[in-house]
Length: 96
Image (cartoon, rainbow, N blue to C red):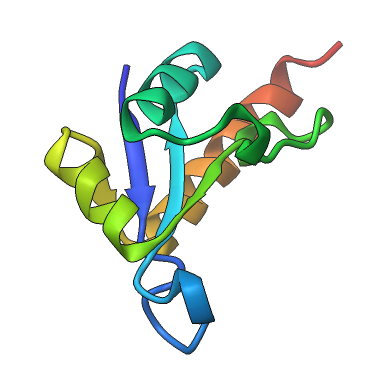
């Protein structure tokens, strides 16, 4: 199991989130546990029940740096997008 952080907000001017990204994990339990270590509130969790591969927390630059320091896998946003697409395809393939 792994926790990931992408660099989605690094390019461009996103205000408070400039330099940040998305925190995601292989499981929800792992994601919430890691978010708790970072001091993130559960209310900040973003989900769409129909698209669980997009479950995430947004991170600021400082939050992203702390996540990487705690062991999150740093990945470019394009790699994160490919990983999420593969998860979605696997979920749709398993659906009855």
